[in-house]
Image 1 (cartoon, rainbow, N blue to C red):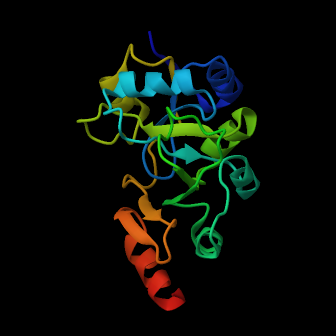
Image 2 (spheres, rainbow, N blue to C red):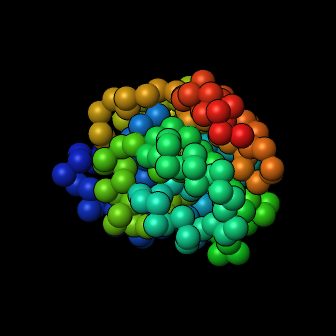
Length: 203
């Protein structure tokens, strides 16, 4: 049975994650479904719960920019400029990963990472460390903006939902590949126009 937790139960949500359970929580875009970023076997449960194709990598969310050094290496200067401008926020950057990022999270040499602009999500990750997070829906279902919408799709498949109300954004983040000389937009999402304008001015 899936528990619905209130914000004052933040520590319980964190403990469930530390106990290698799947927990959904709000971000600045949509509700995410997370597990510990460095725990490959539990990351596999994300694919099962969502019925997600196994070839799709799972992004990592972090609470603070200092956490980037735990998952990424050789981050290019343009990525740091984008972080300075758009983090925390709805921009996911694809950068070279460290070997400690499990293959179950990303089977390639890169990893997608961002800092959400959401106080509850960041407070949760300050208790757990970086989390592997994907949208808290079935792979063919709509992106959820409330705990009730998560429950409608994933009840019985995950341990808990941290109910932080309606997410402010509702649109998934923009994904930008920063592993090449000129960043390439892999998914147009929130902030896409502002990010494109920034790149035109910067490059």
